Amino acid sequence: MRTFPLDTIEQCLNGDGEARADGYSGRGMYGKTCATVTFDSLPEAFQFFARLGEYTAGVPMDEETYEDPSLIMQELVGSAQTDSMGRGIVVYFPRWTFN
Image 1 (tube, rainbow, N blue to C red):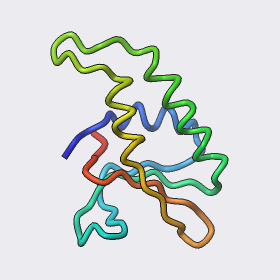
Image 2: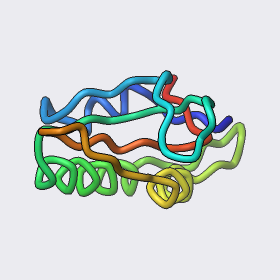
Image 3: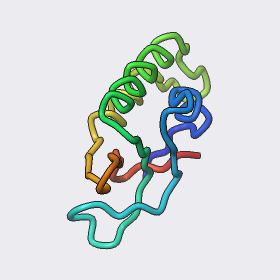
Image 4: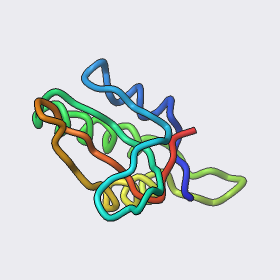
């Protein structure tokens, strides 16, 4: 399971949605759980991803792990799946958790 900082996710939400570190089981996950972000509308989801990209573009590489935050963010976004919740949207990230 990969991890992404929950505080970064919450900062990029800017009050537009709600993040959950774990506990969502999406289509085809067969009971496995993952991280989610929920939104009331699609424009809120787009704004979140734009803010996430802007934020991680300015973060330097981790000198201990040599991981580039922009590449980790690209991996996170590339894994994103969506589902409707009646009136809202859930974006879930299989094999990811927020810490």
